[in-house]
Amino acid sequence: MPSSHLDKTLVGLAGEFLVAGHLCLKGYVASLTLKNYPGVDIFCLNPRNGRQVAIQVKTIHGHRGGEYFVPENVDTLVCPFVFVFIGPDESVEFFVVPAERVAHISAQERDDYLRAHPKAKREQPRMIRKNSLLDYKDRWDLLGLE
Image 1 (cartoon, rainbow, N blue to C red):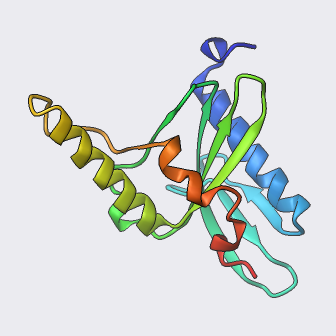
Image 2: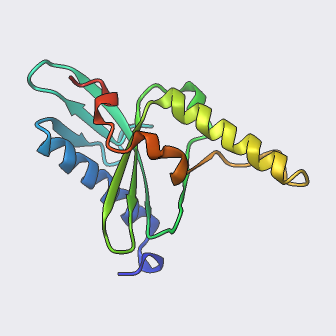
């Protein structure tokens, strides 16, 4: 189904399931919160060593470049993000990024935007372009579960 026909809630939920499934295939126990826990989409446990992590997932579908919206309070968050890109052909890419890097990258991108558009309102939403995340592709080690 073309991305324009998919409700953004369904795209977000698909991304959460994709991340949880991928984590399970890596031997972890992943549980979706289904919006019942603020700021956390997945709780994940490594049953071999007892390490656990809360994860926030952001997903986009079918965009050529793609921009992810991140919470305005990202500077205060500690849980890592997994950004999911679902291509027009339904291919999937994962980008695992520590929260402090998400805060830094999104602040830098907003500053760059405001410099390039001096007449824009100063209150721009926090966003991250997919191309800014390439160094974090499949960096599951950054979850700290091993």
